[in-house]
Length: 90
Image (tube, rainbow, N blue to C red; front, side, top):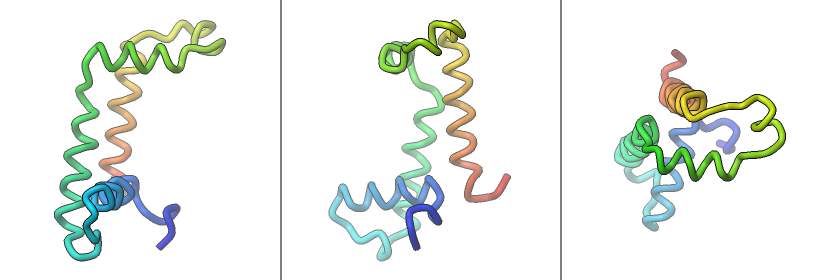
């Protein structure tokens, strides 16, 4: 299976397994649960994280549209929901 055919959760799970020098295929359920927990943790990030991210992405488009923390917070929640729902197709 290529990376393009994997869900984001599976890619995160494989990365976790690799970082732990473990074989994903031996315990896929464990690594998938760890990946879901890791992604879920992104849903409620703190203001310090938002500041660091917005400092990194600030460019001409950011300034023109005047995006603020609530917009990015909603984006992050939407991205996490999309990743978590990718497996179920919802």
